[in-house]
Image 1: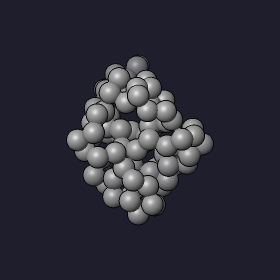
Image 2: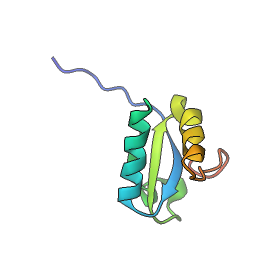
Image 3: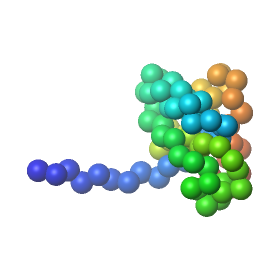
Length: 84
């Protein structure tokens, strides 16, 4: 039997320059129990003016992801920035 995959609302939390850096952040999120994914920033209509790769998480994990990013020395996107 096939399971129906439910779409979760995703929130972009940071944009970085390289896919390698984004993938490393996603792996770090996973170690901390978060579910991140990498997408080109230009693929998100409200971030299409940015170059690089966005890391996004399910909306319910957004605050934890932002706290972790700050601990890692990254500046997350502001909650009121486009794409949020």
